[in-house]
Image 1 (cartoon, rainbow, N blue to C red):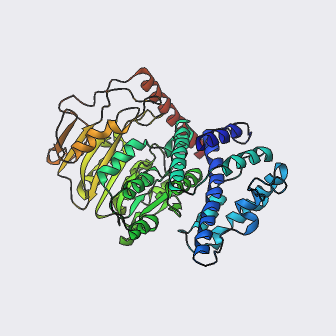
Image 2: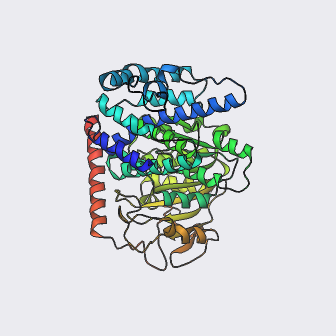
Image 3: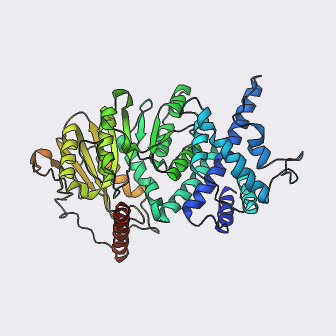
Length: 484
């Protein structure tokens, strides 16, 4: 039923002139899903309060509750067409009354970690792009069919929402930044192995895939207490996101996974000066796939000891600083980081090797990230002691990866198993840091059994890389023109 409802929503959005891409579809479905979820949450809390003989204080005033404007019901529990707004009346109410009212919650909220603050942030960041009040009425009717009451319903909805995010990432533009393949995230989480009570952080949160998978991982631990579940809800997951759409999607994704008031902050992480990070800010675990290929302004670069325009390199410095002593990280980065000869790359590799134990490098094949031709590695490190030995694993699923043949959990099973003991195999080996050139700190992937990173790619993979490089070049030219 849920799957059909999602399909019906997309079908209506396809007819809407204000929505032209998968990004628009996901954004518009997200704010409506959020309000429907909020209504279910409030009704559940009101019912619980009633059972305890207490009065529940609703977050939203009566005219702005889902049951008042979106889906008023008659005595038989059916949609009351006499009271349900539609057409221009509905669009005007949403644009001129509902959104301004909800945005106002940001000023009223006690702190950024409340659901009230999230309401204000979300409705200050996005706009209603559904210009036809009749299309909006049709979409609302489909959304109203969805139920958030049971864990099974939430689980199914979270899977469907993940599928929307994946489709959005595959659709191109900047949507691909928000989607890291979930099998890769699950493998990273297993290797880093977060524990209940540890604080987990992603400073480039995107669609919150890392935090959602870490939550699922910890929630499945045996013998969890009520206190453990409260810790997972309130004091475990932290994220920051610069882009408005990704911020909204991250919050909705975490809510659907079962976290009521996600600790996600809408901010440019890189605008924070590293010198201002204190011990109280540091995290036990960092899981992230920061955007690469971007360029940060000179004033942002001033916040970092190693100055570079490459966003991923700035993020890596941020992550190293944000880790507690003994803290652990799994970070995706472009594979050229391992061998680039520019001063920033060499200095950053030196910093990483001297301040952290870079114990594992996972080399990912082309096609791991659909729609992006760049090759990536995953760096696994622990802060507080220098690196003595690096264990490499060269992931080779034995097939060309792509949209119709994506990475799966089975592809990563051997890596996860061998990594536990840093075992040597045809795909894995160790390198003693004492033998690394101290002038370059080159960490290139060089399999002693198979030459240096030999990968036979399909013509399509090569074309995808050319397209990705063309897009990257076009973005650079656009930035240059904007500065002229």
